[in-house]
Length: 426
Image (cartoon, rainbow, N blue to C red; front, side):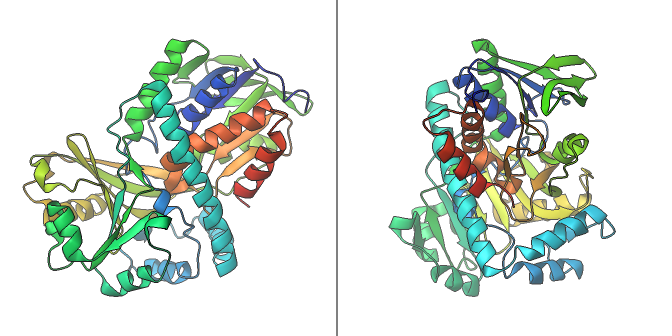
């Protein structure tokens, strides 16, 4: 513990996505000298690049639940457009899937969802504190999100859950929603109702991460090394003394692995294989032609399972969870699903012909909770990975918790450690 309480230590963070950069920020705030290593040439080049842009506190629940096995069966049969299985012979997927099914009980779902919600709320609060301190602009807004239903059965089921101003969710019928936001008339005749969440935010994750890298670089106690591939670690007993790369050796007192789906490869030399599977998601970004026809808040179409967010003069649409291993191919039928949805709802409001399509790999654990803590096999290697579709939501909070654990503040180290143990993947 004495070692953990030292300040001004050298901490190597592997991964310059939003989770890694947020971790670097909080470590620097604690007085550490931080270096960030990433094999990409720019920050936020992978899962942080073109995600939904929603800080989705209201969507912070575990996918592993009583209804999930039926959804997966439908996906196997090709009857679930939002979930695709493209590599059925993938042993890693089946290993992950068995643990996923064990998390589908009502008790496990509640426990996992509560932990995810806690970290997501902390993430949103921590992000706003960073935003105020750093002064970044990233097409952000904190006015909440619409949750829309075109199925009356789904909407009725949702109303049986926790709603109301005290929960942050206020239900409205279709007519009220369209009166509040005329752009929602794009759903006229099909919208059955929805909720307005006050607990969600939006922002361009890639723009935020890039801006934070520039701010940290200017401050001087964080250095970034892009185009740098980690090849191994130099050890001294249970300690890692340096990170080995194709660009040389980087001495350090601690290592944080925040490399998303690449994390299991980096921990292999320690005899550890975190259950993080790359679940591929697709997005399309469209130039906006008529902003008056775009809803003022982002929305999640809970029936079609798409997320739609205005980011400045662009419209971002995301959907699909595809089990395809590490394949990042942008396939025509998947992006056509997004283009068709946009053309049906916002024809003429955006330029579909100029769409930029993208696919990213969400680092997903069976429980939905990330790995957040120290590897038991070492004394100074830490994991901050496996945030799934909530990386943008959880990043600032997870980074703050990680920095507190490494710093070992004697006033809150035990509390932080206990909290992180509850939050982390099981």
